[in-house]
Figure (cartoon, protein in one colour):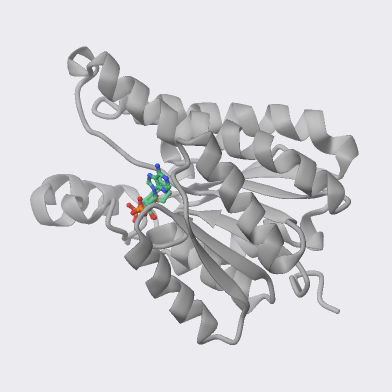
Length: 253
Ligand code: NAP
């Protein structure tokens, strides 16, 4: 059987109802995994659930707010009820706000750090016991180019995504002997709802990003899926605490 085969494995994808999360959820399902789509918007959840069901995969949609511990616990419980266990956790849910650092309010800062960083910790902590029970597992956290670069207009976002990388390393070290591998994917600029305003309202920045990207284009959400399958599969059993940039070369140019 292929090292990349995920048959019999069960994954939760936070924010799996759109954008990069949907791309990852589809790829995991195509590789054979059972999938829980965990997002706040139930209509979006249901749409992706039907799409994945159409692939012949086993899938549930679960309303989940990653900022809420009860909601996280319910999501893990619903997944285990449906599929009998948990093997793969993808912490993908995230938001962005744009502001110069001197204008960021406490409320704006806290809200972004809560959704993009604290939630990753909360979900990993809640999933640990279930992954242990399964004999180990895979955690994939979604960072960003701003995990490694600074930004003049997204200091809170960059701080959160830098934190995701450092958290992933610490969890990787802590849980290595539990056979839980924890890695991060750092997407480059990907066409999703999050980046759509760049094209419509910030044409100059959009053009500058393309000019700065060696492949001269934005990526598609599906292009993150393959790396997620690799990090979710036994092919990456000796890979932990790493960050893999999927960015069309943006991070090396
Ligand atoms: P998106 O299309 O806006 O998707 C964001 C997802 O996060 C949505 O599915 C949303 O679900 C979910 N979400 C937000 N807050 C949530 C909460 N409190 N609880 C549960 N789900 C929540 O954006 P995207 O571009 O796909 O972003 C996905 C991830 O990739 C984010 O972590 C983002 O920072 C990261 N990223 C994106 C890019 C890019 O260029 N697009 C680059 C690097 C990193 P609901 O609508 O149901 O709330």
